[in-house]
Amino acid sequence: MGILSKRSVYAINPIEEEDRVADELSREGKQVIKLNRGDPAVYFKTPKYMIDAYVRALKEGKTGYSDPRGIRELREAVALSYRRKNNVNTDAEHVIVTQGLSEAISMVNSALINEGDRAVLFRPSYPLYRQYLKICGGVEIDGRYDESNRWSIDVDSVAKALRRSPKGKKPKYLLVTNPNNPTGTVLDRKVLGEIVDLANEHGVLLIGDEIYDELVFGGVRFTSLCELAEGVPHIIMNGASKDFDATGFRLGFLLMPEDDKVSKEVREKIRDFATLRLSSNTPAQYAFAEGLNNSSAHAKALRPMLRQIEDRVSFATRLINESGYMKTVRPGGAYYIFPRIDLSGTDLRSDKEFVDRLLKEEHVQLTRGSGFGENGHIRIVALPGKNIIKSAIDNMNLFCKRHST
Image (cartoon, rainbow, N blue to C red; front, top):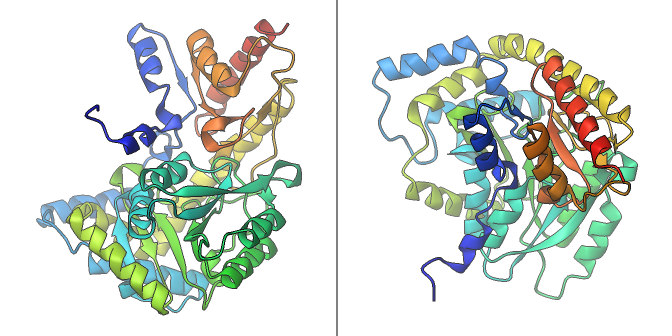
């Protein structure tokens, strides 16, 4: 019997699985174009007013442990933001601050999942949802996004899966990402309402990952789950990383605005798990509170970043669809593009081999679609400047041409 636990086999992040190869190429003096990680702070400076608030907190000695739930100022700022933007009746007691959304989903699974418990995840989706579920011994019920319908959710397939659930074995939760990572889909309000109705019918806890909620464009309208789920137990996950361009702050939050028995029980147990890690980054919490409260400064910082993201996503989408080797649905939010790659006329056997060999031969780092649960695709992060995006896609076209049979 080895020293490692059985669950350790699931400690894999496909987004970073090529990092060692990329690092080795960089040490050899190769210029690697990294389009695998969605880190806006690399390309857009974190807003100065938030940096100033961070420095101020440091200078004022706010560097100790804070309330495990998060400082009250931040929890009040989150609640105020949702009351203002989404007309949700909530307060600071409904908010728990986390070290990013990765910790949030880890806490949710730790609080809810026993060996063999099930949860509905929609593929393609952020890989760590699946990994944290498996680490806790959970089993995935495979919901689907429909590529032929602009990556909208296939609600009927989920309804059938829920109705087939064995008696006494209903899923513990149903998780929706909106806007979606990796496709950039922004769900239609009607579809989101159907999902809420479905969860309510089957008594399943709803979870909405809305970390990209302000990064929408092209005339698309975002609807928060909490606008439609009043009276239905649900959790909203969000944070500082994307809209506020502060990935390194490692701050997220869970908002559970309902006060029914299930919501109270889950909220209290997640709070217990929060005590196990003492607290989140204290000075960063003060900076994030400033970001939420100073809505005019946030809007001023967000507008130019969003314009550039939309421009780069549109540019990359056009080049991809002109390539002859890839086709993609135009995203409506976030900054990801998720093209289908045609390997039928090449000597490449899978999206994993495509990504592996592209990095080694052309020094372009992407993420395989199978890592998100969708074979035959790749995820491209359209955050760098257009000249870098063009170089990457040109290299991808040359790579495909060279491997054509």
